[in-house]
Image (cartoon, rainbow, N blue to C red; front, side, top):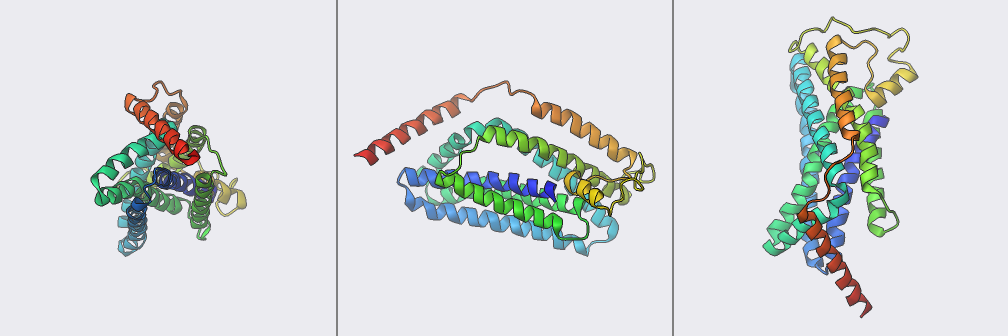
Length: 293
């Protein structure tokens, strides 16, 4: 459940922060007339993400067992690729996320209502689709026959919405760089488990060989139905009897990815980001002067 909670929290907070930054900028610059198109774009993005998740869940139920395993394994690998790209992208841009979004919003304001809707849709929709896919793959991998994995995701999303609201109201200060570094590292560990589970699905679909080649079997020591077996499965997608290929893929993904993710970032902000930051600071100063007057 914790792994799924982490996914909901991390992905949900990204979307919440994007929404907060867009809304706060429009309010601060006196462009409340642009709020409606932004909310329309956000609503459409959320609807598309929910429809995508529902399509994955209910559409796969009509397939044969092998087809389900092939689809599940393939999408699990795609989800891991997307979430890996996302954590590296956010790690690099977290410090300058506000400036990036402000630049896109300024351009959309000059272009009109349609551009505002599209900006909000793209900013939130990307997060929504990634979340729907990764949540579906993770819940499927950590499913224990109960609603606990899904409950973990929903609890994480609700926590993210609360933190986003507190962030918008100024009641909460978040060091985005540190937050996304720590949660990103933990998410890489979760993604490694999802990847291993996806490989197992492909083996059950007879797409990959080696289903009978077990790396080890400690089911007697850590029974899957025990509380600690369930805990390990929920947090790390742990399997007590993985195949050799599962363990190999897990290690080849986790070790280099985590090492690269935790290594220092060598480059600073781009010239465009610095220019946009200066523009934001000027706008803030003018807004403050206007308020004082």
